[in-house]
Amino acid sequence: MTITAETGRAYVPFLRQQLRAAHELLESTVKRSSRSRLRELSIAIVNDARMSDLHAQFMGIHGPTDVLTFPIDQDASGHVTSGEVIVCLPQARRQAKQHRIPPRLELLLYAIHGMLHLLGYDDRTARDFHTMHRTEDDILTQLGFGPVFDRSKTPVQHALHARARLRRVSDKSRPTKTARRSRGGAR
Image (cartoon, rainbow, N blue to C red; front, side, top):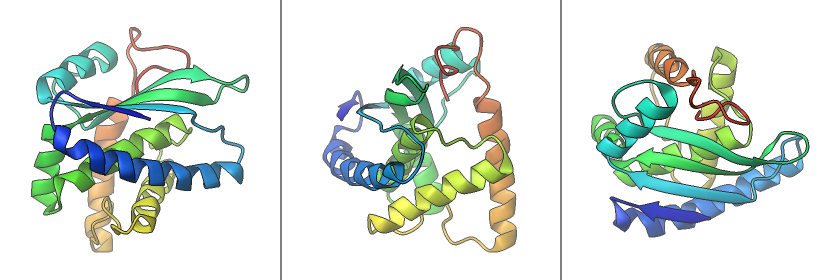
């Protein structure tokens, strides 16, 4: 695992430690499923300007987003074996402030989200969205942080938040022609 930070270098040790533990948890899940193992992972922490550039280039959407995922290599079955996850520190700080949680947890959520995309999870349908975010919160709970995505909303608040986030994610998940690579480019 490689973590680079053009901003937020202070978060790198925390992310490295937690992502290694998260990866071990995911690997134990992979062993029990048909999913392939992720052998190489690169995480990049970027600022709004860099994320905006990448978002426009690969997704055709202007402005920053929270996370972009790029599969790099695949096995013979088409499962991703290496990839890169780009996380936006300013976006994490904004969301963390809004939800009254530490920015490091929001960054960790983004990185885990990207790892799950590389392992074949998706969040384009309501069912997949629920599965993916439940998995994120399960991992974060096993790491000792409790749910970060769900943030203990009432069922009505959670449903409204999920629908709003699903619309944003669905809009972001449509790769442009430029971004289409082996398994669809950025996710």
